[in-house]
Length: 524
Image (cartoon, rainbow, N blue to C red):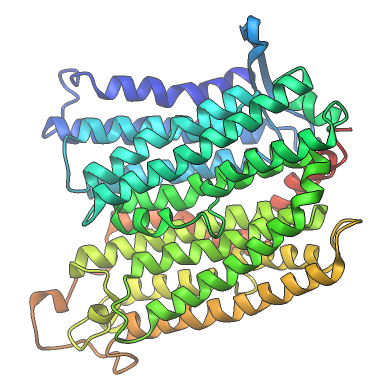
């Protein structure tokens, strides 16, 4: 098992190096570009298979125990070790990352984004996968920081070289915001490691902050929290996100929303809560307040973008919806209760599945109509997907109702548990304040339903809610192809898992709950 986890992290790096080499004779296919794209599908498929094997071999009776561990001295002078491991908190995120990256590689094989060489694209995709997987697998604070930073460069180039209009500005904002947050986070991690006497996350969690003074914990949580909040993204540190999503290629948006945002919230659960519990308790009300404001803010912006005449961009709307959805994750974490933290982890996975699907669908709509402008898509010669491409319209409607938290689908459970956690927060936290945050979150769910239904009405019905019959006049774009076979292959797993997680939440909560209970007790 330990070799399996190490292979999951290292194989994408090896694949990235191989992608830059000339294709062997006989494997070139029709052209070198096709060969390297097929290589990307093969490597990400192998990583997914290894991750599934890791999940199958995982001891599900003891999900709180760190499994498949590797612990090797790396820099003895600084007491930094190559320490890997997986438990019930990190395993679902590893599987989600491997799945979404494979689906992105498969989608790109048939629909490569416009840009430079496919070799660079595949290599960057694999480096991005390796950094994300490593973030969820490492158990050393310095390795966590390195893995956390490893994803920035490939995502920057994916946006800057393969993105759409405004891609250079969006890429620069992305990397400047996240690098600035990371510098502050590094100071906090160093403070914890030096004062705690080790960078080992398991040992620090077991110590549960006893070797860190109250002031040290406050400074550490503030510094680490800023870096994590930028990546999460938490209001008001979110402003890089809409531009990055709008400019990114489809697969870049899928991975940015599906897995990169989860790195920040995972850091709160894995590092902040168990290692600096006093500091987390002090800042929890402020984190909850920012989360509640983010839920309302994201929903109101989406509602404004969705209205007729606002010239709202559908990709930008989905990006702002992520600010609201990740607000529920942060609210669950801020309750400091097993119920709230389990809800946050569930909402993490649900958001990755649902928003990943939505960005795939928006990319397909933009590919067919040449725009993601809502006014253009809802005009008389616009999308009207129910009449022109009913399967695509049905999938978009499914993604929208899943995103608004319909009971029976994955989006419901995480939001509900986060609000349950806010209803009765941890001892010492102000219950009236958290009841207020819960009420704001509940209002956010109503606003989410409002803007998602407006989007479905405008894009799927056309004419701002007019006839669903196909238009018989206009350009050839009025009769686009419906869902293609490769799109079915890339999207079906996300639809199936969204339904499965909604109908059988115990499959995920059974993994996370014992690990969360132990983590909040300080690893004991």
